[in-house]
Image (tube, rainbow, N blue to C red; front, side, top):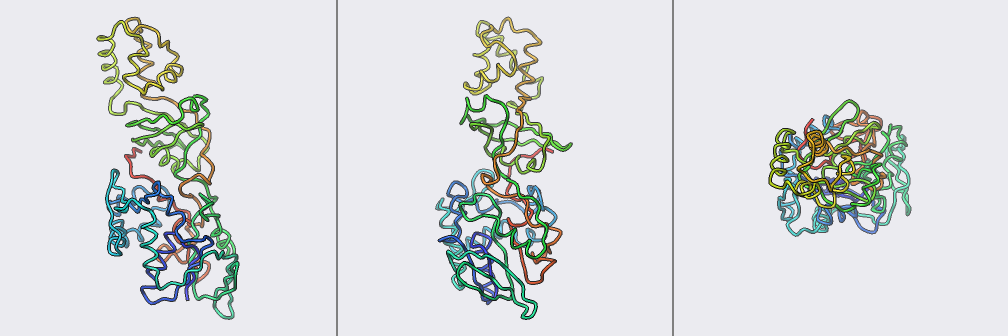
Amino acid sequence: MIAIIGGGGAGLMAGGFLSSFGQSVTIFDGNEKCGKKIYITGKGRCNLTNACSAEEYLNNVVRGQKFMMGAIRRFSPQDTIDFFENNGLKTKIERGARVFPLSDKASDVTKTLLKTCKDCNIRLNEKVESVVFDKTTNKFILTTSKCIMHFDKVIVATGGKSYSLTGSTGDGYKFARMFGHNIIKPCGALCAIEIKDKFASSIMGLPLKNVELKCKFDGKRKSLFGEMMFTDKGITGPIVLSMSSFINRSENVELAVDFKPALSEEELETRILRDFSVNQNKNLTYILRGLLPKNFVPVFLNKAGLDGEKKVNSVTASERKIIVSTLKNFELSFSKLYPLDSGIVTSGGVDLKEINPKSMESKLQKGLYFIVEVLDIDCGVFLCKINN
């Protein structure tokens, strides 16, 4: 008899496979329904995986890449797509190689997983409170909110600690500690970034497209190309969320935005000179509106220390250099990441050194397994252009 604690995507998938092999499986979930977090993923559409090779997927794993290597090569992103297709869920591939259900309904993903678990005993509204191993019977004793049960093996699939309203309250860390496991401090991943710059609130909701977010941290450099947006106190969007996974354990972080990543400084200056030559009697604000979103121009001028009313025919060479350098390296003052509970996924968790990567079994307790987000892995990055 096998117990699975957590009826999310990982727990349901494990339950489906195990029951198909003739195992007796009981799935415990403290919520009123399984897959509660699935319903909010991908803005209610659920990004199942990415249509890419195992190697490409692994190259985008921020933490735990070596640990996951064997598992991803044995069950690749294409295997994930095939799993859902073979169980009746039609899929489609969108921009960024993201795979979604054809129906655009995350609920259909949950229904498909539940269908594979038709032979499992699913116990809803039943929270597991403790897990103990009885050496005399070689059984695990699970105490739940409703009863006490005995099992041969236990799989912990409780998820991390983000979006706690969906049931991800960090219970898996508690169970791991009961067996002596070390927990790497959980922190947010794929979450927005707070900045100290006061102008953020004045342009809240402003999107930036085809820009490059550059970052220096711990002696490293990362840059991500794509889209981002300003919030009331910081920045968010695909490249920001991805960047958060790289910097969530760093304190000294420097951020900057390149508004024209496709152009070198020399090429950008040539373009600006061309714009100046055909608009000599226009003011600087007018020219910048051709290079930046209209609402961002006042923020840019303030950062660069320039007068937007100045006619371009009187802009000096040194001022032009400032425009170019600020467009290519608009600095943002990093404050911190948004709170852990706002992260799409959790970074940190059960120390990978204490888990067998071939089976996900604990090295400290035979018959005890930990899977996916409860572990110290971070594989939730977006597939975007990454420059080291």
